[in-house]
Image (cartoon, rainbow, N blue to C red; front, side):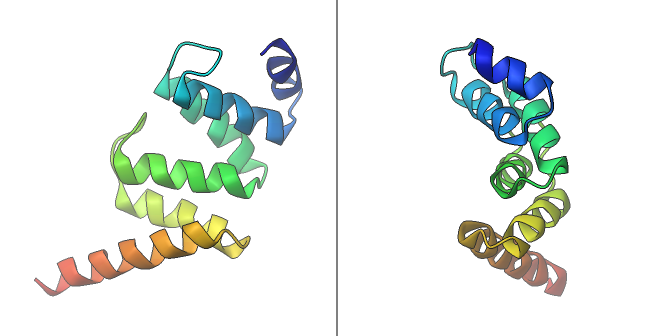
Length: 104
């Protein structure tokens, strides 16, 4: 944990993402959705695709952030553009849902 934290504090995106996952899952640290989001966001803003996907999931499910499909779509789109297949699937699903809701 200490090495991840040191690397994350120095701006290493993969360490930031790893810390986010540790906080999200309570592995080696107390589970804390707010800390998970903070670390995921730092990594995502540096362009790490998996962190962008994880932020999309957080916004889709309202975990650590208010539920917000528009934000989820934005993060899933960024991850999908980087080749994350699961993000493309989520993006397609949310856009279909959004389109269906607009018709009603």
